[in-house]
Image 1 (cartoon, rainbow, N blue to C red):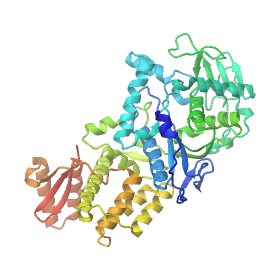
Image 2 (image 1 turned 90 degrees about the horizontal axis):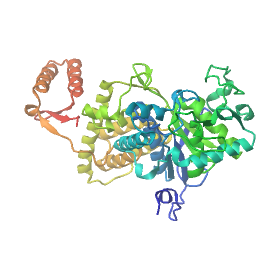
Image 3 (image 1 turned 135 degrees about the vertical axis):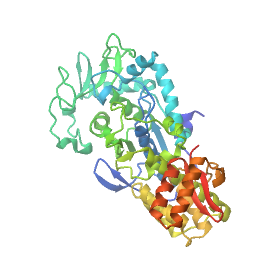
Image 4 (image 1 turned 180 degrees about the vertical axis):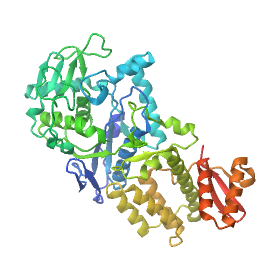
Length: 486
């Protein structure tokens, strides 16, 4: 059986029990809505993937933890989730618009390689990165844009035949004036768009928001193919529409991406897809907010980016980044700092330590509790991950719940959060005498502060110890250290 047949084929033993209610904020309406799948028990989920001209930075990776959390919530709610994350290996111009240089050409020139070699290299890096963030790549399709050129050409031809596209010397363009609802996502219709305010002016374009479906190749273009309009390459926006139609159908449940995709990319997807089919393209549009660095969006153009490999070089477990993302709601901008990430690493290691203890005390037997119900309610209410983590911590530290009830909550938490809570990685625990000298000195200062009841100073020193890669627990035989770095 092929991969796609296994991933998207029918199952005869799917549960007929009605799934619990799940709510998502729909960018299209601007409101929180109950999720209703188009096909009972099946959720069709598409996520805008990376342009593989270089490694994805951690700001990019937030989008994939976000979409994975959606998939986990729906799977736990008894939906069969069919997932696609596209790989853009052609057509994405600098600045997300129709002018400038293709990003794949930039990557090829930088590394003195072909676009195909660059795409292969960084697709592999991307998939390894999201695997390290505990995203199950075995149950996701990763189609490459260059594998679906025929489908893109057919879609563009359909739009031309229906009168939604026109030809210019440099390519085929979508006429946004022919689509009355253009810009409905994110309220763009209410924004007065003047020529040059949003895209560069192209001679002959009928309206500033018109966008390219197929561009005629320039003599030095590295990637070009034959088409009804001449030899060239596809526009960036049409690839997603074509691959969704090919793999998921003309009408899907959920489409996700970063909030920077709303105004241009996703409005263009809606226009070309609905113009071609005459049907609703996506029922729930969901977008994550930016990761910021010192108040600015993390982006390659600003040069303020960090990669997952940098996290590993700091000795932090990759899931520390996943935990860091989950501490904020997906629609809330999240400010990155190494101190904040180190704090997340320390918290995650404490969770893993608690999980080890609860596994032994409960013998991995679970029981229901109102805490589990509250946790599930938070996760099903528009992915309330910060509140869900709060419930998890309060419950695990409380003496009001049995070990079995705590283990039951951990089972649900792992299913929804993906933090390896049921089988945590091994952790190094050591006594004070076995710690490095600088850590022993800090522990002595902390002990003195606690003895003098200067708890503020003791907490400050604890924070300094944690920033250096160790978590402190106060045991009957003195401080116990857990190494929080790899």
